[in-house]
Length: 169
Image (cartoon, rainbow, N blue to C red):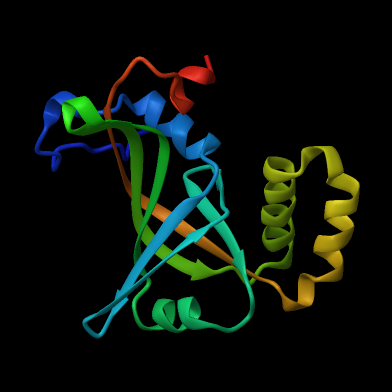
């Protein structure tokens, strides 16, 4: 991952290794999309798929997120893996990855359909045939967004509990 950059992390002892960050980005359950425009901020949890240094999302063809993106395509996408509150230590063990980049609406129908297929593969692999039929049926009223990632950063504070990055090994 040539765009992995943790130089801005204050606690360098908490850096998540690049392969672990990529694994978390690939296998995370959902992400949080953060946007801003005209001094206002907006963020939402959302299903996603990571593929080839891009993040794909889907949504309705209108709404708040699209209005923000239209004004400012620069976004931050966060995936949090396993967490564990440690009350006696007054801390929380965690793992997270941030992806920074520009978000665009995907106009190419082949790329749109491929992104929807990847989403079905990730979230409903045992229902792929039905999922693809559903995606094709709702295709005209589904917007696909793509984050072209410029930089990725990862951080963790470990505990003894299994993490998303540990479970994949």
